[in-house]
Image (cartoon, rainbow, N blue to C red):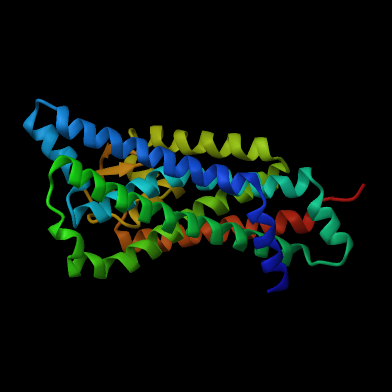
Length: 272
């Protein structure tokens, strides 16, 4: 726990922690503002109705969470890559090994701190998004009667846990890429490239890509296993994984990424 707490204190001071969270909240706010504006100005009744769903409770709970997960997925990759890459470029891993820390333990606990901050960011952004959706409902004249819906509130803890697992996996993937590359920039660049490459490939090979990390993470909170699904903020026609199966797939990707990080760190030459 000593090393874990030290990593938490270290991440509190890292600019990447605050920059990532501000980007997440800022992008979420832009989307919600666009939705509210669209619902008020659209001349198409169907489009206006669809936009109003984002500020209509209790559906707004799941829609806000889906937006946070969609936007936060990419940001979690870049955050994990930025933190893991800095261990090599700043020499902190070398210093830790020199004082006798286990490489694997240092890597695993370093990732655990990253995952903890990713989950805290998810929770904070979700709460901000819900408040923004409530404000949008007031502006557009939508009733807030559904805010206290017992069934929706009862589902929220599980949905948040699922979303936290998805973001933790995305962070682990970026963490592994940067660890293997020993570079923040390479980790961030490759992570972003894979994110969008998978989104593009899902248009042509949805039955294959649904098993890949980002598509699987998008399915963990999905309400259905087939039809038109949202992958990385885009609507993709095809089938997605069953939400419970997606949890298993995401967990496998998370473990594989973490094992890869630990093994690479164990075998890497960090002397000099």
